View 1: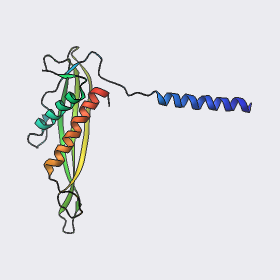
View 2: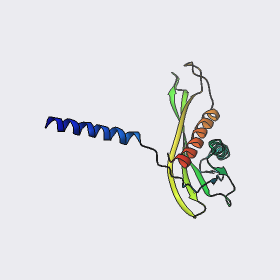
View 3: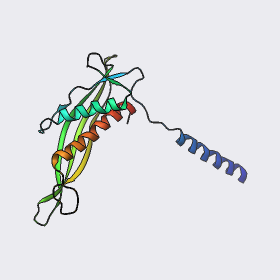
View 4: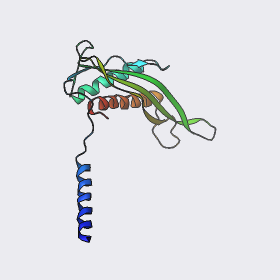
Length: 170
């Protein structure tokens, strides 16, 4: 009886390890999609011209990935539409005079992935975000940055995340 319990436990452990070892992420992009269009992102924030920067970064990320080609909206197999919905900047560290030394910047984005061949929505993901922090003074020995550097860092992360979501499903 003890031998049966032992072999049962070994079989269960082997099953658990085998099932974990074969996990692969769900890929949401259909195999027939070979090209993508990335129209200019819609900017619903009060920050001027950030949509131009993040759109170009996203196109560059798709080109660097190489799994799909970039085409015009009429010719592409799929369309990635993005909307920048929120731009939140928050002071998080102050000096003794209550002057901000460090800020957190978070930018929110909605993504819609559309199958242009079948004329149907494949998926949409709302309120994804990326953030960074940056120091505006050198009191703590950290490099001094301004909002533009922090913003570009966040937009670079968002562009990369859009491509990972479209290509890899995560």
